[in-house]
Length: 310
Image (cartoon, rainbow, N blue to C red):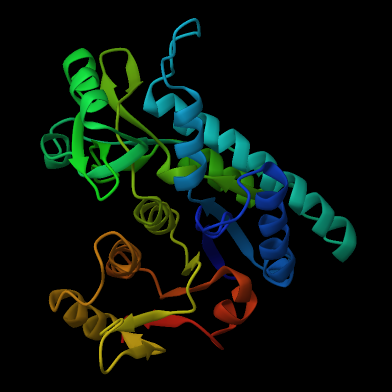
């Protein structure tokens, strides 16, 4: 039996221009799980997920406003998104389970990711989060809260650290659920970022790359495959340029060469490819990247990009 981590992209659950409601996202979750029903039933599957659009909306709803309770910190918003998306996946899976006659139950696990407070990412916040602010709003918030900002075409956005995931603290709970025959849903949004302190762990204002956290979880639990599902059909080189080429079956060495040539965008495909390579360098057998809407064919190797050690 194959042990595989399937990473569902947060953006794939909520496409650009769609209504940002619960029902739309739960519908995408159903489509993905319905496509993957055969894999879930036959293999040892762990599902992780992104939370970019969802945690952004939660963050907006948690902004400080006159007469309202104080907004929650970013790590708490990440925790909320794990519960929200976990419910969507749980609801969708129960429908698929009944329709397909699958015996496996699902378990949604709130998951923390350990990071190093001395990680260089804390000294160079680079991950945009939350709403867009005007010049005046930016100056007021910067003075009041000490937030860091980046300039965009529409205004200013807050930026936060994105440190490397050192450990998935609930990994043994996840594995025990897997061994007991459950379908674990975990490490949402890369996990709740925490640092070690004298009494245990405490949350920090950061965002963990969800694909990288999925890769770390996958190699820590000695998984065979990592399946990264997103909203594009595959990985391309020379994307949007003359000579654009879709990548099908490639080796770790070839993909590293493309990475060194800066073929993949830092805010788009780059993190996914980096996660795939990280998994393979730590003992993984194959990493697959493809479209959530064509999930089963990506898993079977009939579509998407498939990276192997050799």
